[in-house]
Image 1 (cartoon, rainbow, N blue to C red):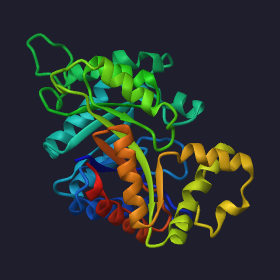
Image 2: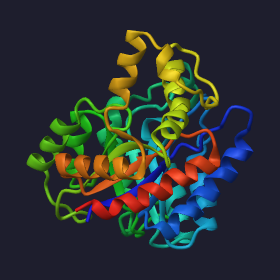
Image 3: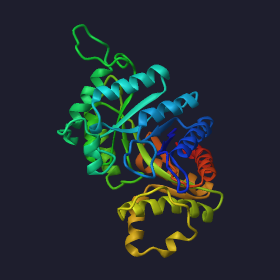
Image 4: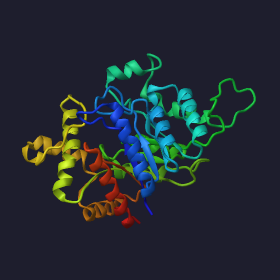
Length: 330
């Protein structure tokens, strides 16, 4: 069976604040836990008025403390923003508090604009090109302590914190394969290289202590409702958010608009078509069919579902429908 998981950006809806976004996040995590979702991941973004998960490790701890069995983790931590030792200590702490439930997905993008990235860097020489070296350094901090080692992650050393490589290009696929790590592809917003990346990852994978065989997760947008009209309505918030981002005016997650696509020009339609290539919007039967088709076409082991919906009750309902639809995944 192909597993289903949740990616939550802890969206801040228009008319609300971060505190409300965090309450929504906890309620959603508790809601999906008994529905059979395997993981609940949160993503690092900065200086974005519509995304509340900037202090990702803090929010992971909050969610893990509010749930019981679901794995909770980062999808992901943007490693160029941090010293690897700090991340090892943070996730060593999380694993010590919630043993056997913490995942650490890492990416090389900054998750923000250039100016904010500069403000976040640990030194003025921080560079995304150092990412492979930083990943290896991060891995080393989770190894058992050895006599004579001068720098250790306490807590962290000797703890089993699964590391994932996340990306949207062949670079991440090649690195994950070389290190023998599971790979997550961001097809929920950058689907162009999905199939090529999966092929490269499988061809080049080398078994490791963590992972003896390739394992691929892919992102997928779902806007599920009890009618096609309602699904289109709730989807319009995410569509507006994407177009606002392209216009350089990101903000809180907009309220939905009826018949939103009717007023779009050809360029806007093209942007949305590319962004939402990997998505399902509609009734339970349609969502079930799209999920099954995506799983069969890609051969992925796990689908990370994200539903960027303004109305919280509608978002909960979307995940209910998605969970029921997963019975068709083979």
